[in-house]
Amino acid sequence: MDKVENGLFVSVEYKGTLGNGEVFDTSQGTRPLEVKMGAGRLIKGFENALMGMSLNEKKTFTLQPEEAYGNRDEELKTSIPRKEIPPGANPQVGQTVTLTSPEGQQIPGRIAEVNEEAVTIDLNHPLAGESLTFEVEVVGINNEPTKAEPGCSPSCDCSSGCH
Image 1: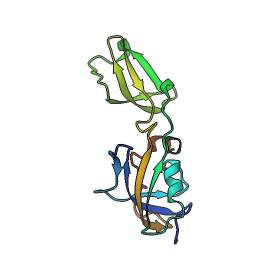
Image 2 (image 1 turned 120 degrees about the vertical axis):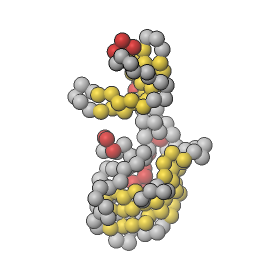
Image 3 (image 1 turned 90 degrees about the horizontal axis):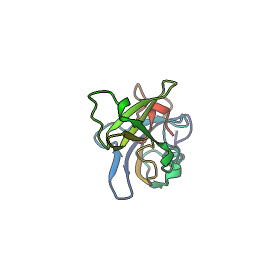
Image 4 (image 1 turned 45 degrees about the vertical axis):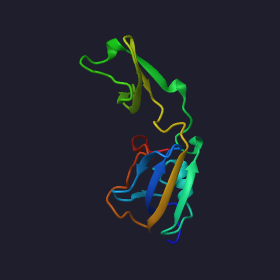
């Protein structure tokens, strides 16, 4: 267990920043993120960057959108007529909402526009189109998990099994 490899449980301290330096996610002040490598619970570029790292090794890397949440797709916007919005609801631009597909799947979205006729919801991941820089340190490599449930963070869309 000298190096990170598929099938091992890896604990990572991390900080994720956007191109403008804004921190979008961090483990600081919480437990390290623990994941089973190869289980598909991390964005692919993040998992690939961890592979082969040693215990206590630190690394900084930048993922392009294709390695993270993909590029923005303007076709992933949908407009819902105001008459279909529940009475008493007060949709606001920037608000996060959850839509339900005909199959019952929960789909998160962000309100992009509100007018008298419709509410437009952007179904792109909030970090789609962004280059993401991570500072990571491997703080544990184990054969078994060290806590009951592997962690989940904004760098993971756990509702869909992560990217």
